[in-house]
Every structure is written in structure tokens, then in C-alpha cells.
Image (cartoon, rainbow, N blue to C red; front, side):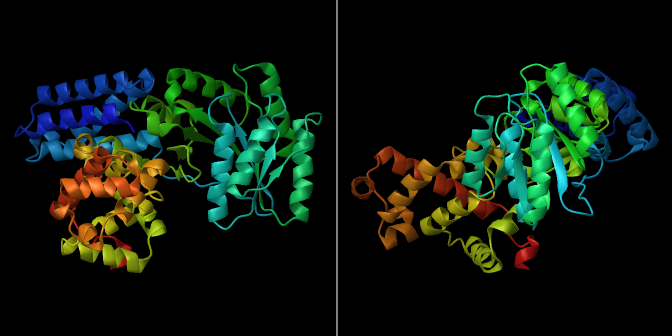
Length: 441
């Protein structure tokens, strides 16, 4: 996520860290490099211009050129200004005082609207709500069937009335159904188009007028660049969009759309999609995202995800093993399974302060999200003796051949597993323990 922009920021900060005091020219050069980095990241040029102006004013007010630690001050100010550009504070879903709360999802075709509806339903169910997915896309072939299939896989109910009813009638039918079945949230999956047209907009305007949804969320593809921003502006001009869900952010190495949306549209980003799995929808926290963009990690999100994946006893046991350097292959496999609930290895490393630069040295990116690879690792570790799991250093050539035969894998796959294990163990030995995670204290 934002890898290119993060690397450029870190390069800029390294340059100024190597200096003592900063002259006015040093500060101007730094701002110029930040400006170029943002423009190359496809951030809207108006947003960049305002950002650099605000940054310069803040640097002058803080008298950075007179400071003994100017680099740290500039990083702090940049972090603050990026947070402001992203929205300053987190915005929650507006819930209706009287059920059901109606959430309308709008957007162009291909932005991930239908899958986002399911992810949002999963998220709200985890918060104690009883959501219902409502299929109103009667234009796209098999759109309703797609939502039903995803709903079944996710154990979420789907309401539909076929292809002949209008979107408004379907929503009204869903409202009646929700009142009879104790459902408190309706998530409306509306029709998308390959291009914005009056028919699409008129339908959304009619829903807004007749139904009055509590939330009208625009689904925006982070990978679409400034085209996404231009389309989003048209949506906001026609209907009163209350927030944005930014999808496919895990594949966005530049970050231009994320940094442009809030300023350009005047509406908050409420959620971000960071993967294809049902739990890959996160509440958007501007201050945490700013920290990640600058390569400073996101420890709060990591703690929240860790607390949801582990119980207190498991965390204490893991911390004890790391402290005593007693982390073995059985623990390694157990952690891989747990990491599936936290994210890929790349995502986890991104969230750890100071660990951003080791990603390229790790060859297990996305390992925890690969079911097939995990099954192979389970077979390999299961084919080892208890002694081999506890002390992998004794696994020589003949033992590797035996393990390969027993697990139905290749020797190179066993070599890769062991290499990854030893790298992780070395990192854990040198790095911090889990003592700072509140759940285990």
C-alpha cells in the first residue's frame, strides 16, 4: 500500500536527517521534493498546491530553521498536514434512531460495489447489527445472482424481487421485510454503469428523494487514478454523497486518489478495502493512514487486529516463547494460521514501525493468505518428528528427503519453509517482544 510514495518520503527525510540545522534553501528544496513526490503519486495538483502552501506556513510558524532537531519537526508537521488532507478524524456510519438504517452504495461498474456490500454487511454483523443485502441492480447480467452467491458464502441474507421491479419498489419491499424479521440495517447494492449516464443518476436521485437513506456511500476504485476523482465529482454533484469507501487500496502503490478525495470532494473516506477476503474492509483512520504513508507504521490497527485474532492466553504464551528464543516450527505453523485473521505478511510488516524497509528481504509476502501454501506447510510440518519441529537445525539432507516423501512435496518447498522460519526467528530475536500489546499486560 502506497509503497512508491512511502519510499520517496523516506528518501526525502533521510536527506534532511543527515544535516544539522536547515537553511531556508534546504527547507525549500525539501518542499520541492515533497511536491514532486505527490504529483508523481497522481495526487490532484490543486490539493498538492494547497498542501505545500500549508506546509510552508506551518514550518515558518514552528521556526524549524532555528531548531536543533529540524528533521524531526518537519516529519511531525508533514504527518499532521497529511492527516488534515485525509480528513483529520474518523467518521462513523450514521445509524438511524429507528430501524432500519438504510445504506445506499453507489458507483461505477467494476469498482467492487457488490463485494463491498458483502464486506460491509460482515463488518456490521460483527458490531452486533443484523444486516440485509438488497439487490437492486437489475441491469447487469447475473448481478443479483452474484450477490446471492456471496451472501450464502458469508452467511448474510439477500433480498431481491427479480428483474421486473424498479429499484425503489425493491427497496420498499426490503423495508417491509426488515420490519417483520428484526433486521436493523439495509445495504442497497445499486446498479453501476461502465460510463456515467442520466439513467443511472436519475435512478439514484429518485432513491434519495423517495427513500432518504441515512448513508449514501460512493464506492471509488483507488487504482483508477484521476479518472476516479472526476467520476466521483459527478456523483457528488448529482446526489448528496455522505462518504466514500475506497476499494483496492492494497494494490495502490501511489496513493494519489486517497490523498485527493477528501479535499476535492468535501466528503469523508469512511472505509477502505485492502483485499479480496470478506474481512478485508477497514474503518478509515486518517491519522493512522498518514503514519503508514510516511513509513511510520500503524501500530494501533495492528493491536486491534491482533486482539481480535488471539485470546489473552495465546498472546502471553507467544510472548514467552519469543523472549526465551523457544519459538519452534509448531509455533510457526500456529502463527501462520492466526495471521490469516490479521492480514498478509506484507500488510503486517507495513503496520510495524521501523519494519517497512525489511519487506524486500522477506520472501513470504502474502504467505498467510495463501490457503494452498498453508496446506503444504501443514503437511510438511506434520511429516516431521517432534524433535525436528523443536530443533529444525537437525534437519539435514536425508531428513528433508524423508519429509518430502511423507508430505507429498518437493525438497525445495521444505527448504523455502525452513528459510522463512529462520528469517522470522532472527527478526523476532532482534526485534521487540509483545509486551506493549495491552491485551497481554
